[in-house]
Image (cartoon, rainbow, N blue to C red; front, side, top):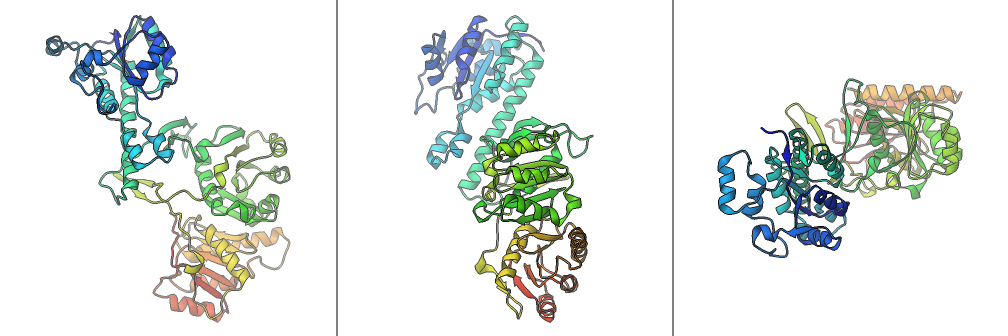
Length: 531
């Protein structure tokens, strides 16, 4: 297979015309004959570029509102013909087909059209057919043809032509071919995913995932693992779209913990008051609402000052200078908030390793359930909707003899919002809309209760109080109590109210244990496992 292939003829047909004029003028500077279609051709004509219409190759004008213009043997023969195959060359001569050495195509903006909220008919009209067909043909024949699908590759192609006297190397064409097939694959994946949502398809026969490289990371979960961040949306959202004000690059673990922190803080609407979430190893270790942002942070920190060291902070309101002064007293990896004041930045800039990120989307409502979650397993992957559900007030069912007080119900609902984001088995004690004990990720629910109690004992020591912060607290459990044992430990700790899904065959025994301690118990009918 020949390495160098001269570029004598190029076909340009692009939707994104960024840099097109300068790029095309540079191509003609190498003596390359340009052919183009529709709007691309008109734009180049208007800017004095020597370009010919693609209809000169096909002998046909565009038809059906531009749906058919490049689906022709003169185009695909010119892209697919292997120049070292005598039979291919003979066919080209017999049918008057000109070889195309360079294809420059980017596709109809389907993803942006969907993101803009256009009608179903308009989205369908923005599904490109001819573009992917040409890209696949050129990429398949990369032995002879170079294919460019992103404007960001214009400069590297021109550099390649400069270095090789108007020719391209095989290795370069191979790299372009990989990018081309990845592009058409991602394009089709986005279309299929949209159709699943638009046409209400449940459990589609095939599921594909697309993403565009956002950045390479220093390493993965551990230093011996490689990692990168890929964006699944054409318009960046979430952490990838955040503005980083200071600090070194985010690590893989930073992204994981930030996602967990932001997922939790979105449960609390900013208009209902400031909330701070502290996360360590993807688990909340302190969550609180406060009168001010500083108050919310201090109350969240008090839940577990030990685990908060080196943790991730997420706020649902603007980070101010007063809060920043408190944060600067301990080591924190990342702070995320919708906005940050200049005063806060001035305080935190002395902590060189602290990353500060802002994005107004951080306080938006939880992600839509159509945002699929994927979990790889050996030989495949599991797919599920994101858990965005919450039990509404009319779904809550009081099952104890004593109904909860207004304060208990408020704390139970607060704890229920938090427990959803704690790894199973999960137990959350809350008092006055602040966590006072969190037990996470244990194989026994009793062990989770014990750990939460131990965290509370540490809090009592910090407060120099002989009275446990669990006394008078409310508790949330992410799943039902299979036995009364965990409930008895909760009762022993001094909690007065419990919210849980219910549904155990021993629910009557658990309810009886609550009644024996004059505790209020509420069933949600909804489980929030998080593995």
